[in-house]
Length: 89
Image 1 (spheres, one colour):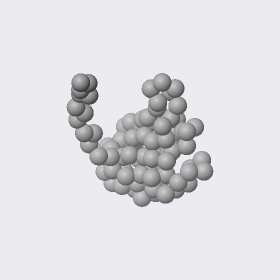
Image 2 (tube, one colour):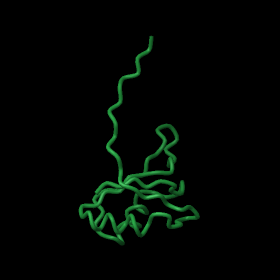
Image 3 (cartoon, one colour):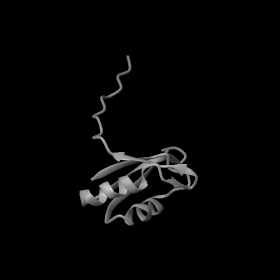
């Protein structure tokens, strides 16, 4: 189960995200999305868990939970849409 996690503190790193979700089960991956130029967190990330029931428990347990002063938003991640090349005229 792939989950989208938003409203992360800009200080949250991938290890902290993995630790937070691992209390609900096995985390196969945790990724905090960062700015390409500065390397600073963009405030959201993705967490993947093998067992759907564990992912659902994590969503239920962590959605709207305040972590580092911010209420997390946890939902099922949507498939990434294919990007079309940016045509310059």
